[in-house]
Length: 349
Ligand SMILES: [Zn+2]
Picture (cartoon, rainbow, N blue to C red):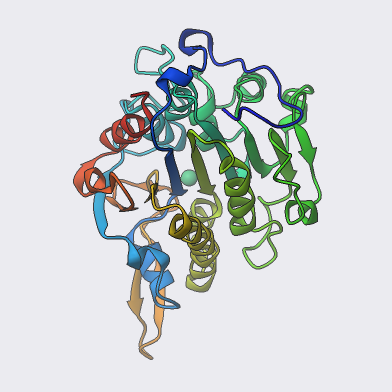
């Protein structure tokens, strides 16, 4: 957690994981981990992106394939899929930060906080939606918004940027202890040298990639500026949601390519940060694939896309990693194994 800054609230980690920050536990060099999740983005999505530009992940030396899953069925579902990445254990449909026995398990954010790291969540989804919730809350019901909001707001997470819909309705005190910003322009003029505990409630969900303001890249850059101030390091989750939504819509090829380009810009921002801070590990993954989206040339040899379903598929999804510790993310493994590697990276040592 940040040791300095204004407007710091007292940190209230979930009861079973609460621990005093101990400088004795602080690592000698900062631990910096950025996890990107492109919701629903499988190989087809990356192929669409690369038909328009070379993606930032082309620079990543480690590539793996991940098998999504849960204990309920063969069809991946967003809450349980995000939970597998967050806690390193598979769970049932709708499970948020809980194991198959419904008991809360520490997420990578919980473990990072115990290690004294700063933490942040950046998403184009509603902040209390399933993917961010799986990292910051613990409940068997992904739609238990008041509980999810309460846990997320009282977690001690230094940066929360996302779509604000329903957040204050779920918990009117969500912004207590935070510097709340709603105007995207303010993200570009943040007094980051004095600011911590920033809650950004924006309108990012129901907006096209071209019109999204703030962009995922802008939010990622601002979050990194703030989190960079913690000498112990940080864990940052960056999620894009619309890849999944447009997959469910079976949206045209160009729309998928534009959403992936929007995501790609945020990864570029993280690579820029890593260039100045080489100890940073960046992992890019998905929770599952949506739509069975495949890319192929049409009769005029123009690349286009086609879908096999309106729902989620059981396709393997790619994982890319760069930075110290990246090697463990290569190869073929489950989502739960990826989650365990994430936790291991931020664990107090
Ligand atoms: Zn979905």
